[in-house]
Image (cartoon, rainbow, N blue to C red):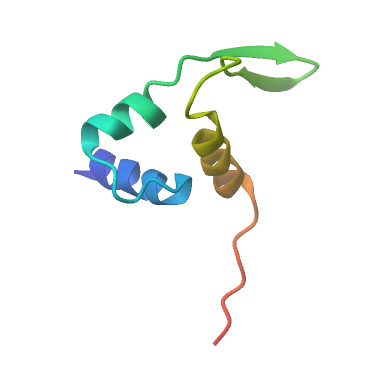
Amino acid sequence: MIGFNIARAAAVAAGLAKARWATLRRQIIQVPARIAATGRRLVLHLPTHWPWAHAWRALHARATSPPQPVTP
């Protein structure tokens, strides 16, 4: 159940809020990428013409950015 909730939260952050579970697995979870280590950094190499790269980058940007301030 926790994995499902995390996947749904990731879908909302990637802009795929109405996507079904199979779509989430195909577009977000099963990423055809490789990780390379250069100069004490990890670099994620995504495919060149991957159709869901924009959604995945949006998810990564939201996950690694500071939280948005809450206005009352």
